[in-house]
Image (cartoon, rainbow, N blue to C red):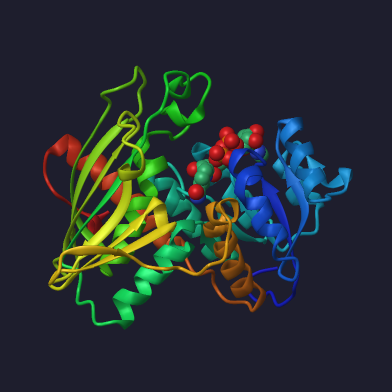
Amino acid sequence: MSPSMKRAPLRVGLIGCGGIVQKSHLDGLLEIPDLVTVSAIADPIPENRNRVGTAADVPSAQRYEDHRHMLARAELDAAIIATPHHLHAEHVIAAARAGVAILSEKPMATSLEEADHILDTVKKRGVHYGIVHNFLHMPGTVEALRILREENAGTPQTGRALSLFGKTADQADPNAVWRASKAAGGGCIGDSAYHEIYLIEAMIGSPVRYVEARVQTKFFDFEVDDVAFLLFEHENGALSTVATSWGMPIGRDGNLCEVYTRTHGIRIVSRGRELFCMDKSNRKWQSVALNHGLDDAALARAGHANCFAATFKALAKGNPPPITCEHARHNLAIIHAAHMATTSRRAVDVKAL
Ligand SMILES: NC(=O)c1ccc[n+]([C@@H]2O[C@H](COP(=O)([O-])OP(=O)(O)OC[C@H]3O[C@@H](n4cnc5c(N)ncnc54)[C@H](O)[C@@H]3O)[C@@H](O)[C@H]2O)c1
């Protein structure tokens, strides 16, 4: 029932019941019973199906091994896609053909051709498509963006984001983990730095236009990237960088996103869990109180919970979700441009992709 859907709670089917659904999605969905009911689930792994089905109180007849059976038989208004990256296009297109609204985990797809096929299908089928850019909904990010928009902090001229993490050798085994497999759409830029790319773009407040980059494999014996350095020129002329790796376990200082105006610095840490501001006249970083009242566990999943609330509120009114397929394609195009720039050793114009 999309895009004119006007009902609540919306009946949602989950395609994929793995790590992120169990860690974050499920609690977020169960917190908004007025907006959503988990009506059906699909996952080929019985343990994942049972764990999620039990926690969400889904009747056993509505727990499917095959997403196609779920889409054919269950009465649904929307589907959430949380499967490995190479399956997103297939699952989104199946959901669009079933006529339900879609909220997909990132990235939209593994290639721009797949992304365009998705765009074309959701348009033809007249269904809403949203993507999960959850860290835009974290308390620190929301407050940083408010300060940049509403207080006299000035226009961001430069920025940088760090997405530096450490993986162990077994986490980097492509036979055991799809994230380390090229065929499954793995790699640190598309999996981890994906978030820092939309965060730095939002903080700068202007779309990325030109991309220079080196995307490489330095730390592990696999085919996907484990380190990438990106340089962006934004449409308004601002400059920013993103550094990402799975071989640089720096700890807390390895994950931040910050911008500088002529008068201020504004920094979110751990993807919006914390926020700091600096007035350049005294050069002291001050912590900004966020007053969210959440414990650590609730704060860790607040991005998903707030993203789901905003998305399903919009869908219930028949409106598009906050982050649409055009945003999703744009973020994917930046990643694609980074790979192209690595090969050509030239800047790539994202608008031309
Ligand atoms: N936004 C975030 O912060 C965030 C965090 C983690 C993961 N993710 C995204 O969520 C998605 C899933 O990641 P994950 O960590 O949960 O992976 P995972 O490997 O833990 O879970 C994937 C699940 O998909 C299931 N699956 C595989 N093929 C399927 C099919 N044909 N039909 C239905 N289910 C199928 C698997 O059995 C598994 O249960 C990815 O797109 C990932 O990038 C997003």
